Length: 183
Image 1 (spheres, rainbow, N blue to C red):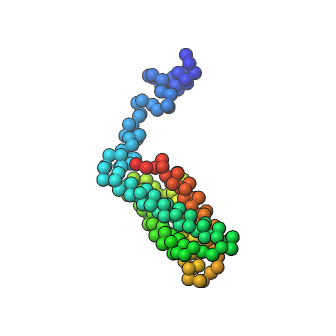
Image 2 (tube, rainbow, N blue to C red):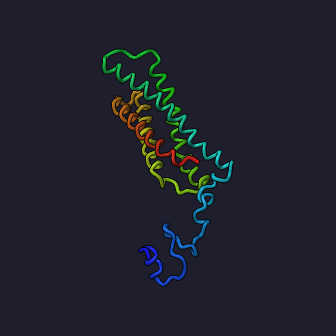
Image 3 (cartoon, rainbow, N blue to C red):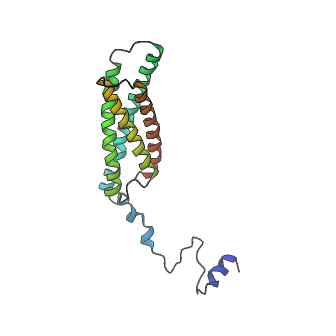
């Protein structure tokens, strides 16, 4: 008799040995493992469509953030070389960055709302949630410093740039971690 069978029968239990997964066939409840109970988007097409709203919004936001970062880094390179700004470069940077920060703020609310009401999950129980929270905090901080820069209230250009770069890096990690959560 194998060690597994001896162990399962030595407890005094009568019947076939437990299967290798450790589930007792007599006490197995298939509804506990039913994915439709865990995630309504598996069977409800409306919930599934709505669940794609947050990821779609964040793809747009990340695109805007990326292009704003690209322009910001170009301005930084010109400033470090002592070359003047290109005409309209700052305006383009701000025209992309402002809606990006707004969309990230909306995403910060829509992600946990989607998890709770559409998916039946507890918000912020995933690596994606915590990375997204950190990325949003960094990006909102970069936006606040940028707003103060545009009004002449500060000269913290380097802080603004570093916050922006760090926010994009963490947002990229959050996006990568979110792929496994797609409906």
